[in-house]
Image (tube, rainbow, N blue to C red; front, side, top):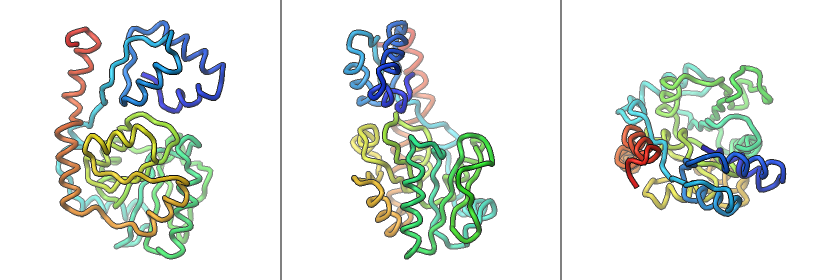
Length: 258
């Protein structure tokens, strides 16, 4: 199950590419969550790639259930310095460079010069309260440590928008959960996210240069309309239910279906 960022790194490093080929030669099956990743493996390691199966990991039943968005927003306001009535953005993918955290922060700072109602929540996926960026009560940013799943779902239900702009990725569970729970989703223009659009999800794909595109998106940001939110929730229940995907993975790996 290759990480999108690791495969991207293998494009730039002969050593990482050799390691990737070494691992793939010893695998019977590579499980990937996008057709773009499947094609990338076949291209980078044409002589090493095992059988490749494209199956999404899906969305849990906890994420698919109906959420009380008003109660979730109240919980978000209690956990952060966001004002009542603020437009709240969540960056759930951590502060690592692969997720272009510095771009998210810079776009947010630029947009907030004219949108003082904006508030940004960042999840530090390194699992510590010590971060590279110190938030204050006046800059509109709250940094939280890794959240348990239930609290993370509450965050998704209580924010207006989720942003994920990595340079490379697979089909992110965090992004799928945001779609399922009903937040507006701002995504970088990479193949795996374009596949979500093709599959029927209502997401916003940002063009390049991503800093300018994200700044503009923040400045004009509005919550997801109820009809679009419901359509995304229906899409997730139809296409991304974890129990269905899990059965498909089991059958594929045990040769139960082909």
